[in-house]
Every structure is written in C-alpha cells, then in structure tokens.
Length: 205
Image (cartoon, rainbow, N blue to C red; front, side, top):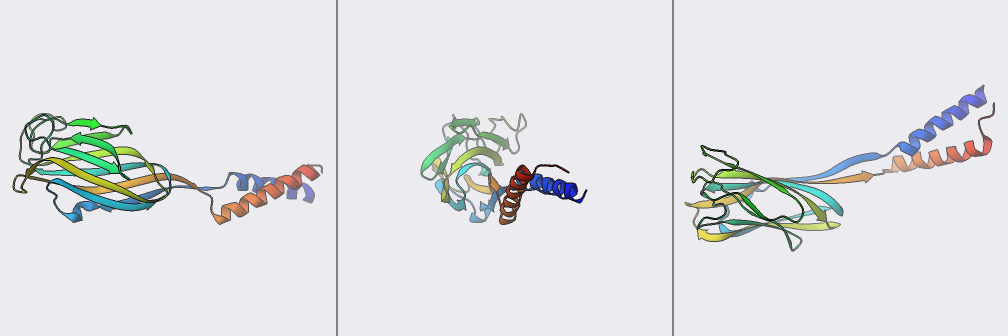
C-alpha cells in the first residue's frame, strides 16, 4: 500500500512539474504628454528596451485647436517610425477639418479619432471645430532584442501654436512572453526524474 501511494505521489508531482510554467506579458508604459506641445513639422523620439518578437503598441495621439485631417488645403500628416522604418501614416481631423484617413498601414493597425465639438459623427467628422481631438492608435510591432526606437512625427504646413499643435499621451507596448523561472526548471527536472522512475519500476503493487 505504501509503495502504491508513493508512486501515485510521484506521478502527481510529475504532472505538476511538466505542466508548470510562468506565463505573463511584458508591459512597457509611459506618458509622453510631459514633453508638452509639438509644432508641425516636428517629432518625438521614444526609446525603450524589450525582448525580441511580436508586440502590441497602443497610444493616444492628441491634436489641439485646429490640427487638420486629410484632403483640405492645410493637411497635416502623422508618421510613425520603428527602428528607422516607417510603419504607420495617417491624417486625422482634430479640430481643423478634413477627413480621417490611414495612408500607410502594413502591420494592420487601427485608428479611432474623436473630433471634439463636432455636431455630427464625432468619429467621422469633417467639421472645423477649433476644439482639438484625440486619435487612439493600435498596431502590432516586430521588436529587436534590446534597444528599440519609436519616432512620432507630423509633416504639413508650418503653423504656430495659436493655430494648431499636437502631442502624444499614454503609450503602451505589450510583449507576450513565456518565462520558465528557476523554480519551474527545478520542477521540470523533478518531473522528468519521476517519469523515468515510473517507467523503470511500473505501477505494480
């Protein structure tokens, strides 16, 4: 009876060891609004460290007063670069009129614009409101191991801050990872030894 119980215990802890692991996501966050307003043309550079692989980026692009969308005579165009490669381009009505348009999007990101003060569809307005707006952008990334650089920039007509300006608020990079910690490695080793022992001795009473 004692022998059977000990083997059942070995089998139990073997299964725990083999299926034990620590799974979590690496999340890097920042608030770039502390950098203040940016004029057009202009850019913000953000550097961060991360493991290599696929990640998800989300951030808030803020427009103030009359930042222009696409297809009006003062079109302002937003560009996003990762490690020297452009990965997203768009133009959004954040108070200055024009339409919300994604111009370049090879990674399959999404953008949702809210035009403050619009009296029609606030997410699809072409009205000039002079009240600014917010564009929430999400897209997948392919990161390098170690240092990575994101550059947020605007090109367009050079207009003063009493007309329009922009900035970046909350930003988040989430990288799914599977981490096997030292304790899990020890459990795995124990489990493998247990399997080897059971294979040699069997479950005979």
